[in-house]
Image (cartoon, rainbow, N blue to C red; front, side):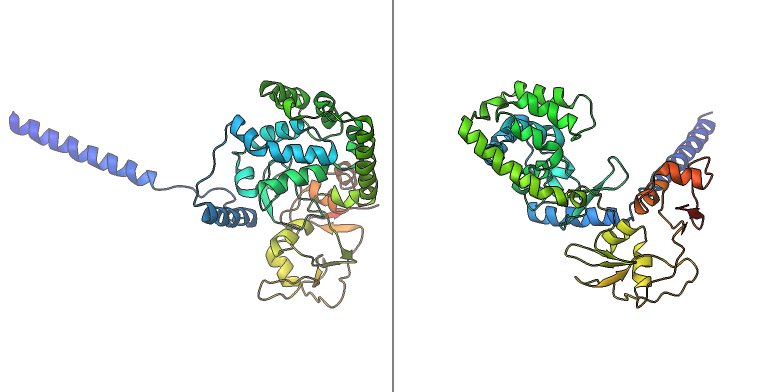
Length: 354
């Protein structure tokens, strides 16, 4: 009897070991992260490595109060220059950056969620937001982010806000939403709630009538100067700029991956059609940024011949990106090409103009 029980126990143990071994081997099989090999992922990892090398991975973890203590000085300084209530700037920083603890704040020093636009010549940090892989500006330090926040607001649509009193945080909160700063319908309530919870209005300052007039004149004069540049400042980073026909002139800050995103090419395609063997591009270099549709041979010395009314879908293209590239609406593309399910395929020829 004891012999039979011991054999049974041995068999049970062997089965258990085999089962646990199988489970252990299964745990080792992991799927790679989706998109982990993309140029945007690699770009972010490079930025993160540089920051971690400098900080040794030791980030300051802010509470709302320590964040206020750290940044109230520059918020007041920007208020005195431009009239943006310090309470509004601090509340936006707290809300947009999670008290300065978000990845965007830590790795990109971006405390206000300001995105790259066509005039931005600095680095970009990519995150999914309104669209996949939206480009956000990277600053050298948080103070640069605060200063750029003030410059960002010096636009025509925000001009009426600079005519408000310097301590009218409720008017600014409503005006920012009306001018399109945020899509959240509760954005004004959120800002006012933060301001009143932490008494941020204590940092706002009233100004005399003459002082207000001088400040308004100075800021509104800057806004008027900026108006002709606003179409470029507000254009998404993937919109083409500095184009001569089918060519683009490389400027400071351009890289093969940023240009491939902007012009709807892969990095390999961009380098191949320009016969760039070492992967390096230079400021002032003239790059071909459109693929020929009727030939696989590319000659960077001549502009390609292409049909201005037909576009061949390339890898990574979407109806949205194509509509932006050719300045037509998605609805127009759908109607012109009798698209019923909003899907397109690589190699598909699309009519882009009548």
